[in-house]
Image (cartoon, rainbow, N blue to C red; front, side):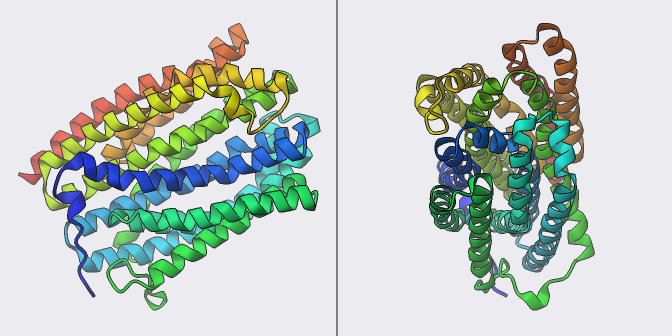
Length: 449
């Protein structure tokens, strides 16, 4: 088996390497967001506000499932990257094959669980009676794409661990174009509304998963996927699950907390619900562009920690933190300035647009503060620490938000008081994550001496 070596992560200037690593991944992440965003845009413009509200009402649940899989994929990325950095070829191959089985099983489990509990979850959210039938129909069809989404994020994690972020981008580009074309076909021509955009999404997801499967199967190095070698290695299984489950839960926890926020939004009229659904598309766009830098941070720290490069571990974190904060600030400015143009992609209704603009203005002043929290979590994960960061996230970004909804929001009951909880929870959680990262960084670096 041929040994892999990727000097760009462990040698040379860090900033250009992180940018080169992150840009294709940013575009890949944006394309994943566009799957759901194009669904909402097409139904909003061609199937009417009720279909928009129905699909938009599922956004939190879609984020819950897909966020969990993306988080698990980042855990796979860390394990594979550390093996590569340490030059452990056999361990790399075992991690690749073990992760393939674990991620596929996870996708199937999410499909089954989601199908059973979809009606109950939508009712828990307080989804409007006018919208709930369409929301159930959309989500249950969409869930059939979970195994494909799981496998794509597995492959994306494996390839990006070696610095290859270009292939996933190409595969998602192909799938993204197909998704948009099928959306238009199913909604405009066949009048399938919510069911049509859900079907288009899962077809595109299976195409992207198939392409990444072919790419891995054709490799002849440690990252190659050979079906006869598919088995669960106990040690790698523990390593991958130990990082992937907390990573997935960290992403899912935000969605769980946001269930309560969505329930708060649902206490307002349908115009506010639809405006929130349109404006919330910006969240995934900003978060997933920033998430590319977090993946880079975890990958660079993992490889350099595996290779014993202490100074590059520290610099990788600081550069990633500054880069993610700057990206969020720039994107927020564009969303605030061009908010009306952004919302026009999803609705033509002026009242819905005004409701959406209110959300964009508040969130535009908040997004950058999430960088401290998420980048620091990624850095801790790169050092092999996921348990404590997950507990901190549960307290700071789940428990805190629920308490806010039932205290501050319950008192004022304004949409502004609901949206302001984001910046407060991000700031509090970020500071706590930073304190923990400094502690485990010192411990891990002392072990390298």
